[in-house]
Image (cartoon, rainbow, N blue to C red; front, side, top):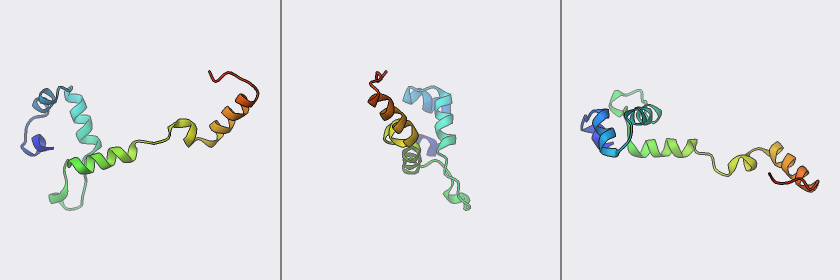
Length: 83
């Protein structure tokens, strides 16, 4: 965020962070904050963190999908292998 505020190029940010420039572009695009007032638009670290956390799903696929959970339990009761 600080390098972006300092108007450092994406290529230089990528070099300093040891990442590919496309990763930096993706991060900036994915977590850019849009507001009606142009003064409040931009990339902000805290907002980016909150957006990323909201996209991250907790609990795993089995916990989130009830049908899959019941299917797995039914098969395990029939002595199927967990594999």
